[in-house]
Image (cartoon, helix red, strand yellow):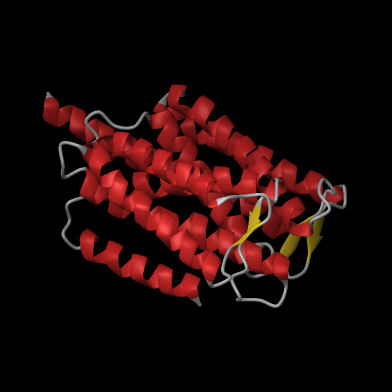
Length: 289
């Protein structure tokens, strides 16, 4: 319940600020995808792979599902929404780092509350570790905030493209795989924990495509980009077929065609994002001239 309350408060706060229209849609998307990618990177390492702490969300009777729900709430919703709010305030001051102090303090207090009410469980972790990452994370966010809000200069495009690619590929897996809709499961046997096994494989395969997109798309002429995206989508389809043939991809309410679309559709959305960003850059260049 506490996760739903936090999400509700954060969402209302964010929407109230967005109604003021002080951030462009490009800035909002950039802040969101950077927030998702940074949160997912550390959560994937410390929570899923190393198992240093867990999220007993009390939203399921299955402890593995409970933790994964907590990861989805934190990485894809609460933390990225908070970062959008943070960018809004940090961009309005000449000293963005000062805004990082109350945000970091607020998250340290909130984590303490989660611990006290049993919505977070430390295994090999400590609140001082969390405090360090909150302080460092929001301090780094203070450096990025003016770049995100003004696009002058912007966060390097390769970084934005990598973060967007990771976000869209991971959102698809978070929704359709275990535990949310539970339509399929990846089980290559790399980890004993079946959720870690599934999520790690999803992240690894998705980030292979993300890195390929980040390497090749920025240096590809505009007319040839659809071909490059198509080739990368074909790699994704090959991954789906390979994992299915190896017996690693288990279908519940899923099939091979949908498994292929699971890669092809996100790559198509990334192509649209690239066009959107390229058009925005072109328009800004014309205005400057």
